[in-house]
Length: 93
Image 1 (tube, rainbow, N blue to C red):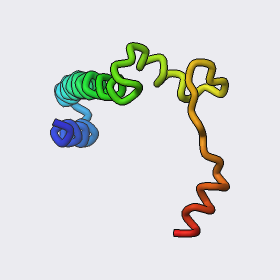
Image 2: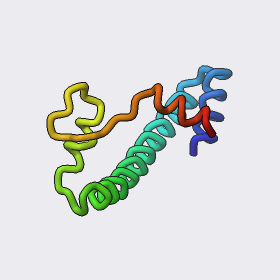
Image 3: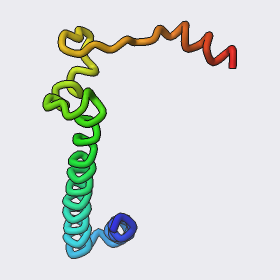
């Protein structure tokens, strides 16, 4: 699909025809729709895996994932490893 979209885009750029533009826009919409469904399916398989891995069937997996990037981690206890210790570890290998 993406290859067809690219070909139609090049065709539209060379001809600047209205029908080529409509065909390109149609393919853009199809590709967006397909990628959205693929991402949704991946997310639906990812979340149960996280729920299972984090303390066996934890209901608040979305909260945990959302809180990972926060600077203040109230609900989430992660022992972060200092960068210096990582460097020492990999230098010793």
